[in-house]
Structure formats: C-alpha cells, structure tokens
Length: 234
Image 1 (cartoon, rainbow, N blue to C red):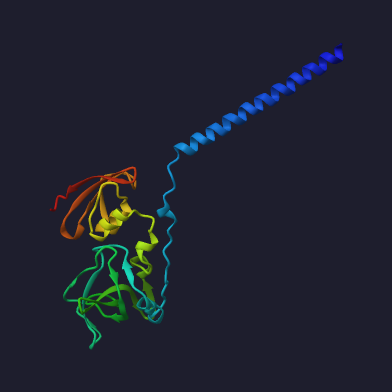
Image 2: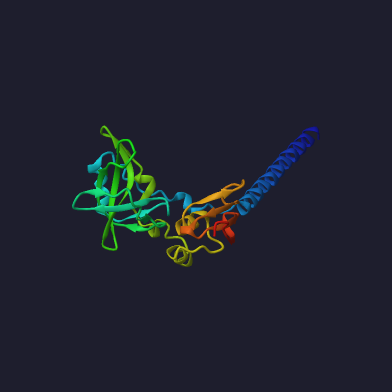
C-alpha cells in the first residue's frame, strides 16, 4: 500500500509538472502573438541600399557620364553656366539649383578654380535645355581628391529603388507636391529637405521647407504627414 501511495504521488507530481509546463508554454505563445500584433510592420525603406561609385580621381569619376543620375537632395546643388569650348565655369553667375530627384545626364567631369576657394572644384557638367551647366561634386588639392558625389547623386532611378511606393505617391513626388500620409523621405523627394522646428524624433516632428521659394510647414505623426501649412517666409 505504501508503495502504491508513493507511485500515485509521483504520478500526480509529474502530471502537475506537465500541466504547469503546458500552461506556461501556451502563455508564452500567446504573449508572442500579442507582441507580433502590436509591433509595427518593418519599413521597407530601411532595406533600400543605393549603389555607390566611390570615385577616387577624374578618370573614375567619369563613370558618372555612363548613365543618368538623380539628385538626392533638391535645392541644395547650385549650378553655373559652363563654356564647353573654353572648358570654363562662370562662377560669377548662379544659373539655378538642381530640383529634387531631378534626372541629369552628366557629359563630363572637370576641375575648375573657384574665386576665393583653395584648391580646385571638381565639377560635373550636364546639359539642360540645350545649354551647358556645371555643379561641384568635390574638391582636389595637390592630387588629393575628395568626392561628395555618392552622397549627392543616385546612379539608379529612385522610381526603381522605391518601386513599392504607391503610384499616387510617385505622382505627387514627380509634380513636387506634398500629400497627407506621405513619409519624410517621400516629402524630401518631392520638395527637398526641411529644417526642424523645436524638438521631436524623425516621424514625429514639424519641419519647415523652402520648396523652391514656396515655404511650407509640415507636421508628421507616426511617420506620416498630418498637417501642411504655409511657411512664415511665404
């Protein structure tokens, strides 16, 4: 009888242990499902890695002439008239600024001396409306080259890099317009970079944009545009 009681108690302990383990396992699975439901979906923008040319001299920089390029930042690159016959850049007259993700066909990469600037500027030459222009993509001094082109230009079509964006978003970007629901990156593609007003993390803050002279103040919440207002300088 004593042995039977011991066996019964042992079985009871084993069954209780198995039951407790099963309950804990169910709770763990349930908690994991709740976390997955609460976690926001991963932003596919984070997984886009544009190609880089990494030029190191003029010869390698001429790779920029082999395919179209697109401006990464709008209204940030000033271009100047270029005399192709004299290989001369007229730094005395600003001809304009490259638009957000504007497509450019670079025809040459040269160096030119800018007034009151040490060393020489590395200039990308492109044609626009049958006229030649040039903008700086780096500097060189005593054969020491510093290129910024990888941070200035896409060598892949942004429409293909971000082909998972909705068609109406791309339509607004191509028209340089902003719509509620767009992300900060999409707005950057449409109207250039903004300047933060006050504090706030990316996706939950307010920025002011020049938008080529038409200032806008845009508020973001949870990574999306929620409010669009005229800027102070308008």
